[in-house]
Amino acid sequence: MLAYGYRKFGGPAVFETLTQPTLTPTANQIVVDTLAVNLNDEDRIERLGTNADVPLPMIPGHDVVGRVSAVGSAVTDVALDTIVAAHTEHTYAEQVCLNADRAVPVPDGLTPTQAVSVITPGITAYKAVRYFADVQANQTVIVKGAAGGVGTMAVQLAQRMGAHVIAVASQQHADEMAALGVQQFVAYDHHNPAHVLADQGDVVINVALNGVDGKADLAMAKFDATIASVATRLPATSKSIRFRSIHETNAISDQAALQMLFKLLATDQLITQIGYQLPFTLDGFIQGHTLLDEPHDGRIVIEK
Image 1 (tube, rainbow, N blue to C red):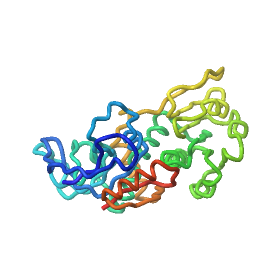
Image 2 (cartoon, one colour):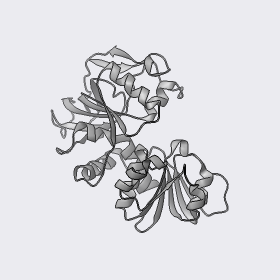
Image 3 (cartoon, rainbow, N blue to C red):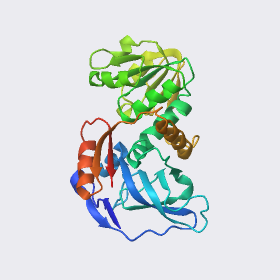
Image 4 (cartoon, helix red, strand yellow):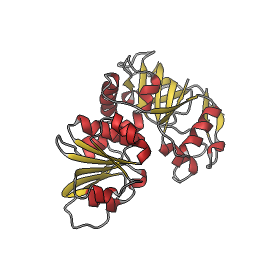
């Protein structure tokens, strides 16, 4: 089979075609023939060599939708030819092997491209809203980084929880936020959200790049608010803040999160924003990572 990866760290041009043996599942595994892959910022960070633990050569990728082509001897609940999605590893390949219990069936009403586009951003947002922030009905929830992949999901999920959602993003995303039904929008490039939203948030969810500007999060939060952020810490404060750093957790399983996300997506209760659909070729992956390195709108999906 063909896979796409790199033998050295660097820019998108490090990608090459890597010929791999056909995959054979162990007793508890399945093999899927890849239909679509979602590109994430984590893939870009790995490619740049920021994480010294990434082994070389590397076949990257974490999000996949594919058709089950082989099942292990102990797998009884996954049928051949079922289309499934998973958050796993080494997905930039024509085949992906994974533990059967990581796979989630894709509803008939969803295309592989739609389904794969919500895997990482949707799982992250779902856990941020439901577990880390513990959003409740009638709370005022401020989402910073609201126009990003995770942010747009967090906005919609918090709204479904019955929260009053305030979105913070750049002015160019004002119409997009309005289309999501956001009740209040603050453009950080026109106004200072820390001043406009001072002491208003019962919950502040910061999914902007690296959880930037914790001081603004504190300024926007009420005295006893919850702040859930992709940052690892907050500046010192006199407020009685419950701070939760958003990270990988099994408190809610990826599979449970995906099942709910697919249900909402299939019933038009959740919108996914796909910006680019590229071919499942070496050029497609290079182009996709070139886009990852630049400001871009919408998910980048590689599809067959």
